Length: 288
Image (cartoon, rainbow, N blue to C red):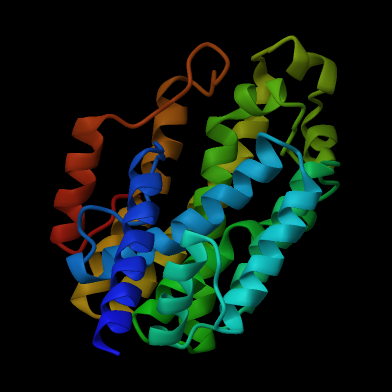
Protein backbone atom coordinates (compact mmCIF):
# COMPACT_ATOMS: atom_id res chain seq x y z
CA UNK A 1 0.00 0.00 0.00
CA UNK A 2 2.78 2.42 0.93
CA UNK A 3 4.61 1.70 -2.35
CA UNK A 4 1.42 2.28 -4.35
CA UNK A 5 0.78 5.60 -2.58
CA UNK A 6 4.36 6.67 -3.24
CA UNK A 7 4.00 5.80 -6.93
CA UNK A 8 0.70 7.72 -7.19
CA UNK A 9 2.30 10.72 -5.51
CA UNK A 10 5.24 10.60 -7.92
CA UNK A 11 2.89 10.42 -10.93
CA UNK A 12 0.95 13.43 -9.64
CA UNK A 13 4.14 15.41 -9.03
CA UNK A 14 5.32 14.63 -12.55
CA UNK A 15 1.96 15.73 -13.96
CA UNK A 16 2.11 19.09 -12.20
CA UNK A 17 5.71 19.53 -13.34
CA UNK A 18 4.62 18.83 -16.93
CA UNK A 19 1.99 21.59 -16.69
CA UNK A 20 4.47 24.03 -15.17
CA UNK A 21 6.99 23.46 -17.98
CA UNK A 22 4.31 24.01 -20.57
CA UNK A 23 3.10 27.22 -18.94
CA UNK A 24 6.58 28.66 -18.59
CA UNK A 25 7.47 27.87 -22.20
CA UNK A 26 4.76 30.16 -23.60
CA UNK A 27 4.90 33.94 -23.64
CA UNK A 28 1.68 35.74 -22.82
CA UNK A 29 0.92 39.38 -22.16
CA UNK A 30 -0.15 38.03 -18.85
CA UNK A 31 0.59 34.51 -17.69
CA UNK A 32 -2.27 32.93 -15.80
CA UNK A 33 0.02 32.51 -12.81
CA UNK A 34 1.66 35.87 -12.30
CA UNK A 35 4.68 36.35 -10.13
CA UNK A 36 2.43 37.76 -7.40
CA UNK A 37 0.33 34.59 -7.18
CA UNK A 38 0.81 32.68 -3.88
CA UNK A 39 3.34 29.92 -4.45
CA UNK A 40 1.04 27.15 -3.25
CA UNK A 41 -1.56 28.12 -5.84
CA UNK A 42 0.74 28.13 -8.85
CA UNK A 43 0.63 24.37 -9.62
CA UNK A 44 -3.15 24.55 -9.88
CA UNK A 45 -2.98 27.64 -12.07
CA UNK A 46 -0.47 25.87 -14.30
CA UNK A 47 -2.79 22.86 -14.61
CA UNK A 48 -5.65 25.09 -15.77
CA UNK A 49 -3.33 26.95 -18.13
CA UNK A 50 -1.97 23.72 -19.65
CA UNK A 51 -5.49 22.45 -20.30
CA UNK A 52 -6.42 25.64 -22.15
CA UNK A 53 -3.07 26.06 -23.92
CA UNK A 54 -3.11 22.61 -25.53
CA UNK A 55 -6.74 22.92 -26.58
CA UNK A 56 -6.01 26.36 -28.02
CA UNK A 57 -3.16 24.90 -30.07
CA UNK A 58 -5.48 22.19 -31.42
CA UNK A 59 -7.75 24.98 -32.68
CA UNK A 60 -5.31 27.73 -33.65
CA UNK A 61 -2.34 25.78 -34.97
CA UNK A 62 -3.83 22.48 -36.11
CA UNK A 63 -7.46 23.41 -36.85
CA UNK A 64 -8.40 19.94 -35.65
CA UNK A 65 -11.92 19.45 -34.30
CA UNK A 66 -11.24 15.76 -33.78
CA UNK A 67 -8.45 16.50 -31.32
CA UNK A 68 -10.72 18.90 -29.46
CA UNK A 69 -13.33 16.14 -29.21
CA UNK A 70 -10.72 13.76 -27.82
CA UNK A 71 -9.58 16.45 -25.39
CA UNK A 72 -13.14 16.68 -24.10
CA UNK A 73 -13.21 12.90 -23.71
CA UNK A 74 -10.07 13.20 -21.59
CA UNK A 75 -11.89 15.84 -19.53
CA UNK A 76 -14.76 13.40 -18.97
CA UNK A 77 -12.31 10.74 -17.83
CA UNK A 78 -10.75 13.19 -15.38
CA UNK A 79 -14.15 14.00 -13.87
CA UNK A 80 -14.85 10.28 -13.66
CA UNK A 81 -11.67 9.84 -11.63
CA UNK A 82 -9.79 8.07 -14.42
CA UNK A 83 -7.41 10.68 -15.90
CA UNK A 84 -4.97 9.49 -18.54
CA UNK A 85 -3.01 12.44 -19.97
CA UNK A 86 -0.55 14.19 -17.58
CA UNK A 87 -2.49 17.47 -17.85
CA UNK A 88 -5.64 15.72 -16.70
CA UNK A 89 -3.86 13.85 -13.91
CA UNK A 90 -2.95 17.26 -12.48
CA UNK A 91 -6.28 18.83 -13.38
CA UNK A 92 -8.29 16.02 -11.76
CA UNK A 93 -6.42 16.63 -8.52
CA UNK A 94 -7.05 20.39 -8.73
CA UNK A 95 -10.73 19.87 -9.53
CA UNK A 96 -11.15 17.50 -6.60
CA UNK A 97 -9.36 19.76 -4.11
CA UNK A 98 -11.33 22.88 -5.01
CA UNK A 99 -14.64 21.32 -6.07
CA UNK A 100 -14.54 22.94 -9.51
CA UNK A 101 -17.49 22.22 -11.82
CA UNK A 102 -16.93 20.92 -15.33
CA UNK A 103 -18.78 23.72 -17.14
CA UNK A 104 -15.98 26.32 -17.38
CA UNK A 105 -13.67 23.75 -18.99
CA UNK A 106 -16.38 22.73 -21.46
CA UNK A 107 -17.11 26.38 -22.25
CA UNK A 108 -13.49 26.91 -23.29
CA UNK A 109 -13.74 24.01 -25.71
CA UNK A 110 -16.87 25.54 -27.23
CA UNK A 111 -14.89 28.70 -27.97
CA UNK A 112 -11.97 26.76 -29.44
CA UNK A 113 -14.33 24.87 -31.75
CA UNK A 114 -15.73 28.17 -33.00
CA UNK A 115 -12.14 29.31 -33.68
CA UNK A 116 -11.69 26.40 -36.07
CA UNK A 117 -14.79 27.48 -37.99
CA UNK A 118 -14.24 31.21 -37.55
CA UNK A 119 -16.92 33.39 -39.16
CA UNK A 120 -16.38 36.74 -37.46
CA UNK A 121 -19.00 38.76 -35.59
CA UNK A 122 -21.92 40.85 -36.74
CA UNK A 123 -22.42 42.91 -33.58
CA UNK A 124 -20.60 43.72 -30.35
CA UNK A 125 -23.06 41.44 -28.56
CA UNK A 126 -21.91 38.57 -30.77
CA UNK A 127 -18.30 39.31 -29.84
CA UNK A 128 -19.21 39.45 -26.15
CA UNK A 129 -20.96 36.09 -26.48
CA UNK A 130 -17.74 34.66 -27.88
CA UNK A 131 -15.78 36.10 -24.94
CA UNK A 132 -18.30 34.48 -22.60
CA UNK A 133 -16.86 31.13 -23.64
CA UNK A 134 -13.29 32.01 -24.65
CA UNK A 135 -12.22 34.33 -21.82
CA UNK A 136 -14.65 34.47 -18.91
CA UNK A 137 -14.28 30.81 -17.84
CA UNK A 138 -10.64 31.45 -16.95
CA UNK A 139 -11.51 34.12 -14.41
CA UNK A 140 -14.25 31.98 -12.93
CA UNK A 141 -11.82 29.08 -12.56
CA UNK A 142 -9.44 31.35 -10.65
CA UNK A 143 -12.26 32.40 -8.35
CA UNK A 144 -13.08 28.75 -7.66
CA UNK A 145 -9.46 28.18 -6.64
CA UNK A 146 -9.80 30.90 -4.02
CA UNK A 147 -13.17 29.72 -2.76
CA UNK A 148 -15.42 32.30 -4.42
CA UNK A 149 -18.54 30.98 -6.12
CA UNK A 150 -21.09 33.82 -6.02
CA UNK A 151 -22.63 35.52 -9.04
CA UNK A 152 -21.54 39.08 -8.23
CA UNK A 153 -17.84 38.25 -8.12
CA UNK A 154 -18.19 36.15 -11.26
CA UNK A 155 -19.82 39.06 -13.10
CA UNK A 156 -16.97 41.42 -12.19
CA UNK A 157 -14.44 38.77 -13.16
CA UNK A 158 -16.19 38.43 -16.52
CA UNK A 159 -15.72 42.15 -17.15
CA UNK A 160 -11.99 41.90 -16.56
CA UNK A 161 -11.57 38.79 -18.69
CA UNK A 162 -13.66 40.14 -21.56
CA UNK A 163 -11.92 43.53 -21.39
CA UNK A 164 -8.49 41.90 -21.42
CA UNK A 165 -9.42 39.75 -24.40
CA UNK A 166 -10.71 42.76 -26.31
CA UNK A 167 -7.48 44.61 -25.52
CA UNK A 168 -5.56 41.67 -26.97
CA UNK A 169 -7.71 41.72 -30.11
CA UNK A 170 -7.10 45.42 -30.76
CA UNK A 171 -3.41 44.96 -30.01
CA UNK A 172 -3.20 42.12 -32.56
CA UNK A 173 -5.36 43.43 -35.42
CA UNK A 174 -2.54 42.88 -37.94
CA UNK A 175 -1.57 39.45 -36.60
CA UNK A 176 -5.17 38.24 -36.58
CA UNK A 177 -5.75 39.53 -40.12
CA UNK A 178 -2.80 37.42 -41.29
CA UNK A 179 -4.61 34.41 -39.76
CA UNK A 180 -7.82 35.27 -41.60
CA UNK A 181 -9.56 36.65 -38.53
CA UNK A 182 -11.28 39.99 -38.07
CA UNK A 183 -12.60 40.61 -34.57
CA UNK A 184 -14.09 44.03 -35.30
CA UNK A 185 -17.88 43.60 -35.35
CA UNK A 186 -19.09 44.14 -38.91
CA UNK A 187 -21.68 46.58 -37.59
CA UNK A 188 -18.89 48.73 -36.10
CA UNK A 189 -16.88 48.66 -39.34
CA UNK A 190 -19.93 49.92 -41.18
CA UNK A 191 -20.74 52.53 -38.55
CA UNK A 192 -17.30 54.14 -38.80
CA UNK A 193 -16.96 53.72 -42.54
CA UNK A 194 -13.93 51.44 -42.52
CA UNK A 195 -13.84 48.59 -45.02
CA UNK A 196 -12.27 45.15 -45.14
CA UNK A 197 -10.30 46.28 -48.20
CA UNK A 198 -8.81 49.11 -46.14
CA UNK A 199 -7.99 46.67 -43.37
CA UNK A 200 -6.22 44.42 -45.86
CA UNK A 201 -4.23 47.43 -47.11
CA UNK A 202 -3.46 48.40 -43.49
CA UNK A 203 -4.89 51.87 -43.95
CA UNK A 204 -4.74 54.09 -40.88
CA UNK A 205 -7.11 56.97 -41.56
CA UNK A 206 -9.58 59.01 -39.47
CA UNK A 207 -12.19 56.26 -39.84
CA UNK A 208 -9.81 53.62 -38.47
CA UNK A 209 -8.74 55.87 -35.60
CA UNK A 210 -12.38 56.54 -34.69
CA UNK A 211 -13.12 52.80 -34.82
CA UNK A 212 -10.16 51.98 -32.57
CA UNK A 213 -11.05 54.73 -30.10
CA UNK A 214 -14.55 53.34 -29.84
CA UNK A 215 -13.38 49.76 -29.25
CA UNK A 216 -10.70 50.85 -26.78
CA UNK A 217 -13.11 52.90 -24.69
CA UNK A 218 -15.53 49.97 -24.55
CA UNK A 219 -12.76 47.66 -23.34
CA UNK A 220 -11.48 50.27 -20.88
CA UNK A 221 -14.92 50.60 -19.31
CA UNK A 222 -15.11 46.84 -18.77
CA UNK A 223 -11.64 46.64 -17.21
CA UNK A 224 -12.13 49.69 -15.01
CA UNK A 225 -15.48 48.56 -13.63
CA UNK A 226 -14.31 44.97 -13.22
CA UNK A 227 -11.36 46.10 -11.10
CA UNK A 228 -13.86 46.58 -8.25
CA UNK A 229 -13.53 42.83 -7.78
CA UNK A 230 -10.18 43.49 -6.08
CA UNK A 231 -12.07 44.98 -3.13
CA UNK A 232 -14.17 41.83 -2.70
CA UNK A 233 -11.39 39.27 -2.30
CA UNK A 234 -8.52 38.66 0.09
CA UNK A 235 -5.02 40.09 -0.33
CA UNK A 236 -3.67 36.90 -1.92
CA UNK A 237 -5.92 37.30 -4.95
CA UNK A 238 -6.34 41.08 -4.89
CA UNK A 239 -2.90 41.77 -6.33
CA UNK A 240 -3.37 39.42 -9.27
CA UNK A 241 -6.74 40.90 -10.11
CA UNK A 242 -5.15 44.35 -10.19
CA UNK A 243 -2.35 42.97 -12.36
CA UNK A 244 -4.83 41.45 -14.82
CA UNK A 245 -7.01 44.55 -15.04
CA UNK A 246 -4.01 46.87 -15.02
CA UNK A 247 -2.33 44.85 -17.75
CA UNK A 248 -5.32 45.17 -20.04
CA UNK A 249 -5.50 48.90 -19.41
CA UNK A 250 -1.77 49.22 -20.10
CA UNK A 251 -2.21 47.48 -23.46
CA UNK A 252 -4.91 50.00 -24.37
CA UNK A 253 -2.59 52.87 -23.45
CA UNK A 254 0.16 51.29 -25.56
CA UNK A 255 -2.18 51.28 -28.57
CA UNK A 256 -3.00 54.93 -27.99
CA UNK A 257 0.71 55.74 -27.63
CA UNK A 258 1.35 54.63 -31.24
CA UNK A 259 -1.61 56.70 -32.46
CA UNK A 260 -3.64 53.52 -33.05
CA UNK A 261 -1.28 52.33 -35.82
CA UNK A 262 -1.18 48.67 -34.85
CA UNK A 263 0.08 47.78 -38.33
CA UNK A 264 3.45 49.52 -38.15
CA UNK A 265 4.48 47.82 -34.90
CA UNK A 266 2.64 45.66 -32.40
CA UNK A 267 1.98 47.68 -29.24
CA UNK A 268 3.37 45.65 -26.36
CA UNK A 269 4.32 45.84 -22.71
CA UNK A 270 7.93 45.82 -21.59
CA UNK A 271 9.74 44.91 -18.40
CA UNK A 272 9.36 48.39 -16.97
CA UNK A 273 5.61 48.26 -17.66
CA UNK A 274 5.32 45.04 -15.68
CA UNK A 275 7.32 46.51 -12.82
CA UNK A 276 4.95 49.47 -12.74
CA UNK A 277 1.95 47.17 -12.80
CA UNK A 278 3.38 45.16 -9.93
CA UNK A 279 4.07 48.32 -7.94
CA UNK A 280 0.53 49.61 -8.41
CA UNK A 281 -0.90 46.18 -7.56
CA UNK A 282 1.12 45.97 -4.34
CA UNK A 283 -0.29 49.37 -3.39
CA UNK A 284 -3.83 48.24 -4.22
CA UNK A 285 -4.26 50.48 -7.24
CA UNK A 286 -4.95 50.23 -10.93
CA UNK A 287 -4.06 52.96 -13.41
CA UNK A 288 -6.89 53.75 -15.81
